[in-house]
Length: 221
Image (tube, rainbow, N blue to C red; front, side, top):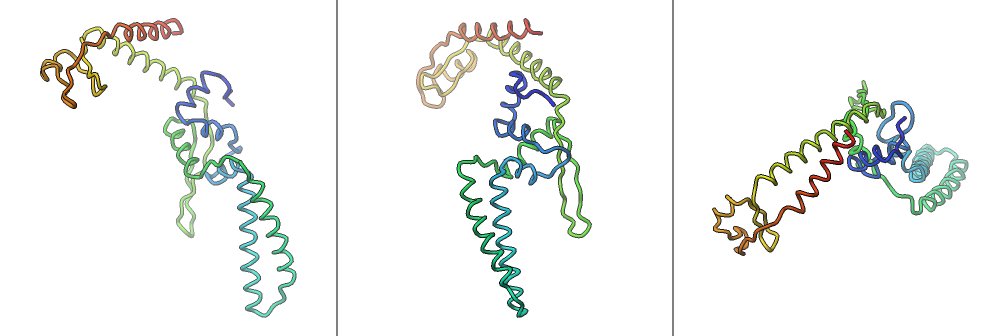
């Protein structure tokens, strides 16, 4: 298992899937599991509360069916009273537990899948035809992926630096847009959105920042 507290890995995953995603990876059950099982693992108190509510519903159905058949229901009613008490307690215990919804779990899983950090198997129920997705975390390629992202970012920084070096810029005082010299001449140095006079922008501070970032990448390459 990877070290999620490694600043490099934590920072990369934080940008990719956020804190909820990191929590999901930390609490992922072992083996191949469904998205609902993952959701229950992330929301244990809510899972207990839901199970308690389901138990109450099931007992109510059983009592109704027994009465319709003229059967004795005292035992079931006693179980129902105890189950209702447990359901109330379970609901109170949920308290301030942060909920990570099933939709959020599915979104995180598919992002991880797109980046090859999960293995997904599909099972089709022979009777209903419903598909069940079973998931397992596989982070073996994360260092390779991070390295690819770093190289991509480095190339983008170099391209942006070349663009800044090779152009003169004019900006709208109202922050509508930023134009290169040729574009500014086409609009007669007027903002095409608000009509304000465009002003020259000194991009030296930004170029210095780009140089610093590029240098940082080259030192760690």
